[in-house]
Length: 217
Image (cartoon, rainbow, N blue to C red):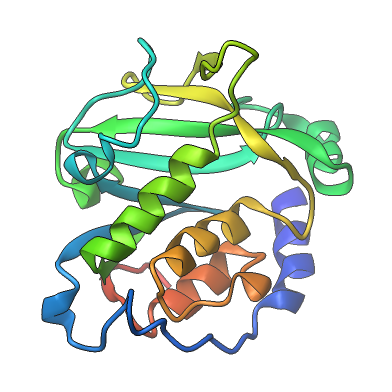
């Protein structure tokens, strides 16, 4: 019931117009965009997965940082997101109050569509320069302590995953989906983060220019 109400509320933001691509980062010729980036939707949250080799040199060092063929990143409220059974109180806190945030990093060694077998997945091809912008944006979102080190929070949802303190305050409409849209926009993709409050809107926008790997609705 709670999730239904959330979808209805956020459905008000579902219609959007995409921004134009940034040609120097996101050229029209797909052959000039050889780097795969995956959008993965779990219910009302969308994360982004990239090949480890394309982001590894940017990642901060930490013993808990996953290492695998792919890394999937998600950003969200520092209490609601890590809690696998958060309840309505934490939901309201995350939605209504500016709260601290975390990054969820998942290491994946099998094809993305197999690992997330029940999720919607869209593939977006970006350029090498666009991938550099994505890598810099994501790694700049790790919050560091006074010693300049990233801060581990807790075990993630999967065996090879972890939560880390992140930069930025979470609140509606500054949601995890807006964050994911910003990741793609950093690569020059024709997506508007302003409208990307819901997971449905992120999927709606990205399917206009990406390749649908799996979409259940």
